[in-house]
Length: 278
Length: 261
Image (cartoon, rainbow over all chains, first blue to last red):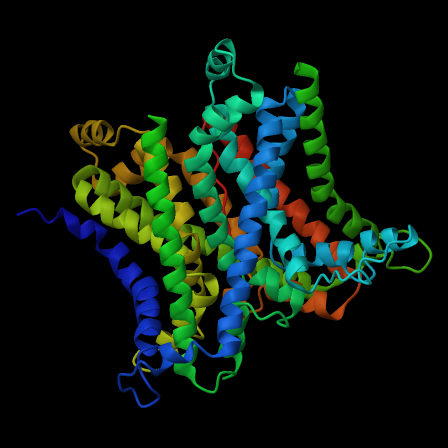
């Protein structure tokens, strides 16, 4: 009899107590009414306009910053790897991306208030040049303001993830395409992009999840006025804003469902791209 | 042809860099204006004169250290054991270590409060629960670091060699395995440190006087101090990642990044 699996017991006990139990209790709670009886009412109540809007806003912010982040971060990674730039660009950009992708929460929110807030540096600068951002409809404490702030940690993450993908493009492929008469554009459309596609897709998915779960930055930036799902859950923890704690659990359950889908999609794309690159 | 592509690349890099540097420059300039009509470091002096700054910082630094120690004690033997004896369990451990991705901090803290604020087990006022929460938040990075380290080491051969020389299990793990994966452990430890230091969500809802909630409170009540604190936080992040990059360039390890936003 082999008893050596006992060595892994502490880990699984820990995971059960602080990972499985808390999330399972939220899942169970979302299928219970206040008296503890089984109900589907909380799940159908997620269809309330205010909750649907919160999910929509969360999905939109995550989607926009995932797509824009991948586009901009991809262009930066491309410029860095294939742009024939001097070495110091890379020596600076990679560590900076590491720092910036971890620079979030309250300090990040404040940096954007100091830059694009009503009396922020750029806002005032543009105003002195005759362009009033806020008159033109921009507001830092709104959808686009939050997205611009999220991009600060999204773009560097893309640079870190996609740099190896661009490095894996062999110059011989381009030479082969060119010697067969392909133009630069044709090479990118028909050779490079198809090879990069799995990596690009999984980057988008990862960024979506990254933004969807974000709480601290949004809280510090908008003080809770912009109703994305994490902010709504935070308000629910502080006081029963939904007038039904079980509806709060259902709100959290919905987040877990979406994050599970995101992770499943990500790992599927990862497996596919691993197969591609072999 | 060659020239043009380099020019476009420069354009992207310059536009991108200005997007990243402008907020830092703006915040820095703002932080210098605490005294009317002069530029100076008054805001920084006020931050460093504030005893809550040190208290909350030390609290978070201590929590980060305890999280790192507890994580290493829990994970190193587990992952090692799985490598050595139970490749099947290894899959399951990997799956569990991915779970925190599915549970954002705000959901995690909600679940912890729901599970541990009433009998039979009341833990919400215990530091242990905060540390356990931080261990969950940083589990994916810590696990990946340890896993990568062990993958690059010949666990079986080292263990057999140590056993044949008469070493017991604790000795094998701490004197043979750990020194071999030190670079990876340092990597995971610093990432954990950076994540826990400024963490807001768990500390705020479990009501601890940590650095994250302190930053949030100051940024709501003060004008110039938050700017100074932002610059200080950014500098701290650089220091932490500077150490990671230094360790990694010595160990030829791949750096990984992550954190909570």
